[in-house]
Amino acid sequence: MLFILQKMIWFLILPTSVTVVLLCVGLAWINRRKRLGQGLILFGILIIYVLSLPGTADLILKPLEERYAPVKIDNIAADAVDAVVVPGGGSIDLDWIGAPPEPNAETLSRLVTGVGLAKGLKVPLVLCGGNGEPFATEVNDADAMERAAYAMGMPKNQLIVENTSRNTLENSYAVRKLVKGNRIVLATSAYYMRRAVAMFIRRGFTVIAAPTYFQVQTRKFSFNSFIPKAGDLDRSTVGIAEWVSMAWWHVRGEI
Image (cartoon, rainbow, N blue to C red; front, side, top):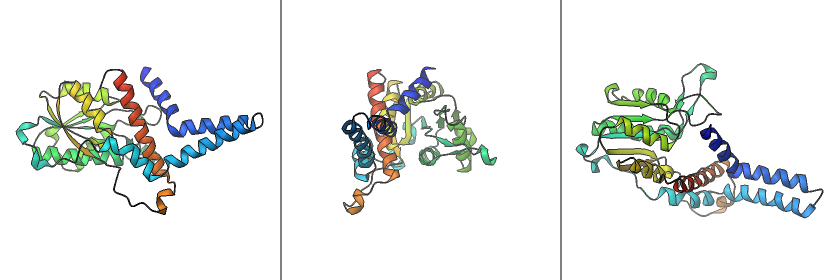
């Protein structure tokens, strides 16, 4: 129940939800207090515009992504790692066309990195993640990743699947029970790596970060920099959500 309540509150504080509230309140007040109503509407539009710019999204995400550089397998000693861990980042439920679920683009990026490292280092690959979106789907991320990992040639005897944990904290506790050693390579999204590393360290692991799915890139400043895009609004939202998550788990003493 607490998990679902947290998700509900989470959705309400995202920029798009806040903007919808501002626009609705502004419309409701525009006939009573015209200037206040107009101000709220204008403020809501301004928020959406600014967050839809590529520069804004990069500004929010860059401090999260610059902590860890992509890892090179040649720099990792095989005898210094007990397992490679890949947390789920979402999956696509294709039941509507009679097909099995697939990892979404973010999860697939994590999985490709994890499979490559586990095969190269000849260590177990731990896929962890159940259903972190209780309102959207019943699919478990780890199950979708398992099928994709086999398609990538991952040996079954090297694969460990955990499909009940719903968030990063639960991921870390679940992996602690599954991995006997303390040395892991963590393959996950760059923007999410700081929080993930901190939580796995709290469980007693020594973590080598293997970030992937970078969203910030070098850009030239031009007229295009002022054109709002839905993709950049999504990136801004992801970045804001991660900053809020880090603050929340810091207050709770988990990072």
